[in-house]
Amino acid sequence: MTKYYAVHTKKYWDKISSNKYMTNTLNEEKFPEYYAWMKKEMKKRLPDYPGDTLLWWWKNNEPETDTFPWGGEEKIEMVLLEVELNESEVLDSHYFIWDFFCVSDRAIPNYNEFEDDDFYDRTRNLSLKDVQYTWDKVFDLEWCKKHPILQDYDYDDEAVQNLQSTSGKVAINRIKVVKTFTPITHTEWLNAD
Image 1 (tube, helix red, strand yellow):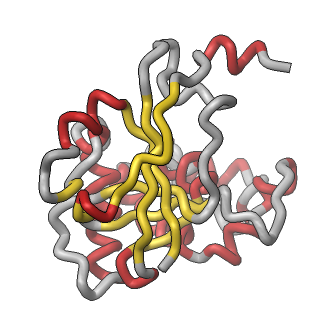
Image 2: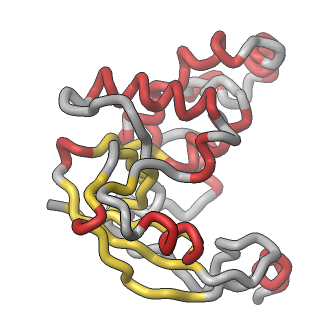
């Protein structure tokens, strides 16, 4: 069993905490194509995944709650949730590579294509479906760790803070609230030393 963490608004937690299962996050409506793609990958890679819901988790490392603007510009109460899951229940992927390329509707370049303007010109106007064929690279964590984009960042091989994990629904009685907190605002984060 491994510890996984999620950050949600207290309002969201209060709404679902009496349910039998935690079954979704609020962003699926905002990003349906990304969720559909990840669900498809989970069905392919996790034999017991039913395909009905998708939850996002941070693996092993408890996210910092007082130095990151989890609520954007709002001062809203948040909760840090913790759950222990079997490795067979989750699919790990590299957060930074996912966020930088996939969520920007871009193809993930191979190492030799990273500084190749022709690669970006060739893939810039492709449809989302046409760039998704490159996205499965986010699951090759060793490949991601060596990607040139990470050379400008302090990336410790032992660290897992750049891992995100996805699971299907989780029984509420498996989840515990680690703490309730009010995060700094995005402006405070930008102005921090």
